Length: 200
Image 1 (cartoon, one colour):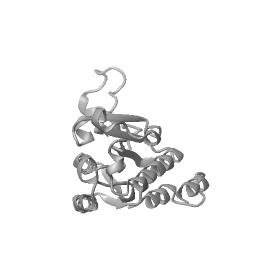
Image 2: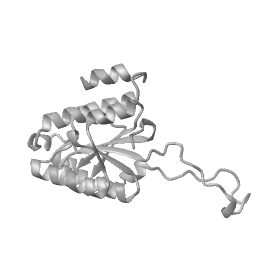
Image 3: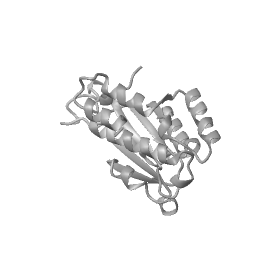
């Protein structure tokens, strides 16, 4: 199965000013996160951010914050525990009109036009906040795509252990370029040249 931009959302987890300096391959990971956010913007994919205890770890770096529609400040390691799931899948709107016009069993549920079930996720630390958020999203029946070259931890071993566990739990492991070209699907996409410039 390929990613579909129209069904995708991007979550950027904890690219925080006091955390990034100790992250393995931090500058590369951050560059890929920013590239992902820019690609998402090009293809009208919503972008969300999280920050773990920002009073201690600082806010997300400015380049990441600027790409996010909203940023969730959290104390739980999993963003889902603090309401991220409601951002990604807003509650269905109530049925309009007179509630007595039809019995409940005959009323059609209102589809949420904005529902996007594919969550592309990247961040730090891979074995803590990213892992716990992704596992909770899987449990909530989202399709989860972890962008490996935009994720890391303080150690390579912890990062790799997170990837093994996520793959075993049903997450798809992808790279920034895989996401870009699956969102595009064709060299005739209107955003192709702009995306190609970001990738190169």
